[in-house]
Length: 167
Image (cartoon, rainbow, N blue to C red; front, top):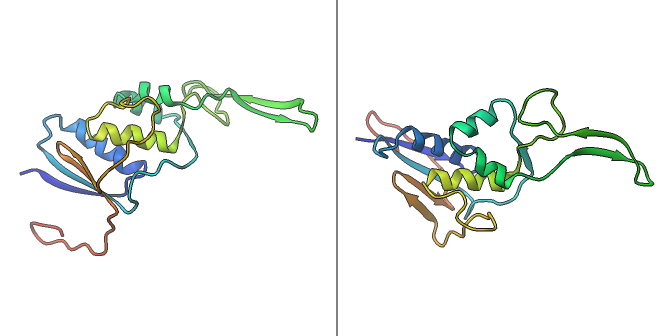
């Protein structure tokens, strides 16, 4: 009997954890994963997220570093300019998380794009299904594939656990 897992929230961490569990169980039989999200669909908004230190090798081990690289925000660094537009201080980007840390990194991705990469991966979909890289429209409140199921527009009001079940 598969272990039933409930993940509350489909922000960055919910789909990331579902991806990790799916990768840990290629047979898709050890877990039954449900992710609930109070919003009616995945949120595309949010600011940039810089992957650094442990984040880069973890994405590589998950097989998602190339997808993150393709969606990365193209920034070369940060510059301070005077009222005439002349730069008086600049800081380059940090390449691959090595060396001196900077204000931006090689692996800087918009929050919504990172969520989309994890969401697609958790469902076993290609992370590059559509050209513009946007989150696919969800026509119903449910998206599922294999042992992973997303339910949108759902909130937890109560959680009770018994010896053999949780409801």
